Figure 1: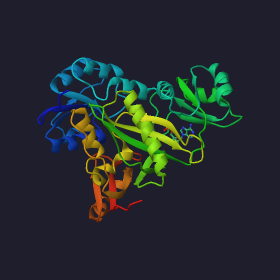
Figure 2 (figure 1 turned 90 degrees about the vertical axis):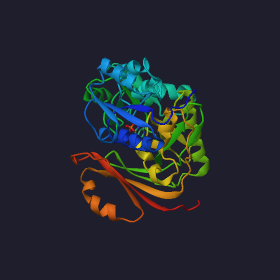
Figure 3 (figure 1 turned 180 degrees about the vertical axis):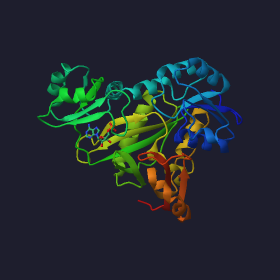
Length: 360
Ligand code: AMP
């Protein structure tokens, strides 16, 4: 197992803000990044090289993989064929297995339950006829979610008791789906775990996340999660990373039910750096982006310890127009993604507001 030396190039599938922050974190380690994206994106502005081509263009993927030393990705909907084409040429970290599991909610829930970790009760739906079976398992009320391409609450319909599940299935255009039982959670938490090529595991502190219009709004650490439950959440995330043979940063989103016998139920995983870990850039010695780069490059992991309390606030759409005031705030680190147009719902940047570390 050899670590890539400084001067090596990391290929990143995806050209968004996560790719941008990965490339920025690679630079202080003397590593270069080459972005592959179907459209020019914010990552291209800060990378040593870019390839703009469709993800379906396997010749272009192979040429890209030949030009780099290792391939990683910054979004979970990288087509599996693209990851496989790259893997035939260079190592892909995290491996395509993590992509396959995370891209399909049915595979994801089946895999996680299969390693003994609780998930919401679920049943597959692939036809109007299968709805009756699903109601038999889950009950009438639940959430119908498409197996693929759902995010930030998109591709899902809440179904109330007495409502018509087949109608919800038709509303999702008959896409293969899962019907999930409702979990009566107090709040949601996310665990950021990083696993090295050698199998070492480290965790970041668990933030309290708030959402606005289905999009992450803030992440705050420390969170009120009791230490024993935080440790259990980390144990779960570590078990998933290990079972996947994962290399890099993995986000695990969980429902928290403080009084339940099993207080932590996994909702979904993100096989990449995660928005709820953006605070680590400024409040930790080695943030999630730097640690993902270290892991995929075969380096030892950096310290995940937090030296400050922090609230990360996303700048969505027009929020970014306050950039000049934000830039003048003391104790605030401003990160702008360089996107040209502040469209509603678009992640334009984030701000990390730091406070001296308070021991809990
Ligand atoms: P997801 O796209 O799976 O992250 O779902 C979006 C949001 O819907 C979650 O963050 C929860 O707030 C809510 N949600 C999803 N699944 C469930 C569930 N089984 N029970 C209760 N709330 C859920």
